[in-house]
Length: 157
Image 1 (tube, rainbow, N blue to C red):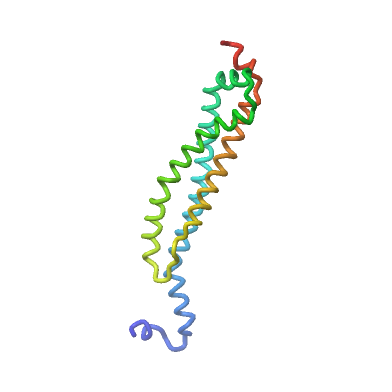
Image 2: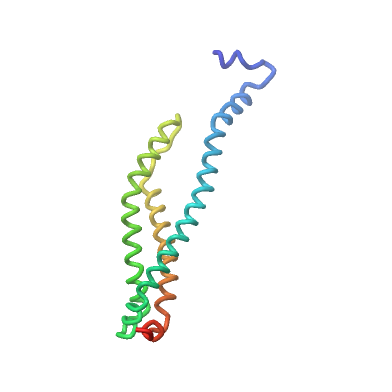
């Protein structure tokens, strides 16, 4: 009742109520935008880190890659070998992060009167997205390392 008495009769009640709801959820909208910006930044930084680690791993294994190429391994086999390590690490991180993300998201959604349920496919799409980014980043660097001339890597041995 106090809510109804605080508004003058000339102002439309429905528009004022909409303004109140907008004010209540404006912080959520602002928080969502902030999370979106920082998520893009975090994905970019993680891709740079992943690229750096894949360059480092390929550089450390230059002689091994050269020997494998001399023995007869194809470039595809070398790319698969280098990708397998990173896919294992990403899968471990995914398995650890899914329950944590589910828990915190579920707690955050409990604060809303009208809430939605979390579906399994949201986490599956996120995992597929991370796997695709990982494979693209690491495969590109692995392919460059696999296409090098093995003689150059073995010459100074």
